[in-house]
Image (cartoon, rainbow, N blue to C red; front, side, top):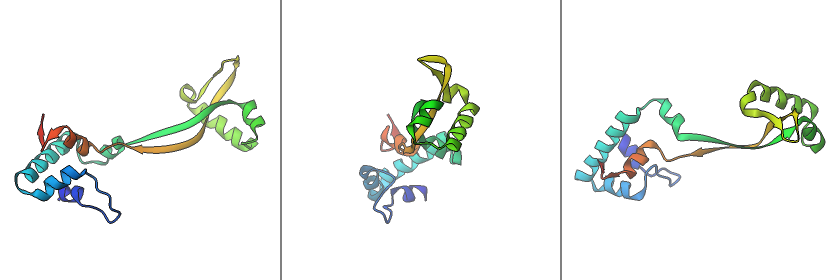
Length: 137
């Protein structure tokens, strides 16, 4: 059942696997059996719980290091926003606060510009790429 869902083309025209895997599934017979074996091996190795999905997504955060004074003079941030940014950064000082290189007594805070989520290939697709019709090489 899972393999059929993975190989099906969605209404949007997207498919979770590449064309060669879809054609192997459509050919049925021995090729489909190898795909089913590879899928079972991948499920055994990686599991089926939600923890698998958290490994597939990666967050990418873009931002810049700014002092409090620089935030005020840039005009991009209101005073309440600046206070919120500083208090948030101070909750995670090892990652979001550093010393300003021109004056080490002045803290610099990491201010996010944008956050994007990147999706890597699923573990199952990676598993299929490293196999020859489901047989580990």
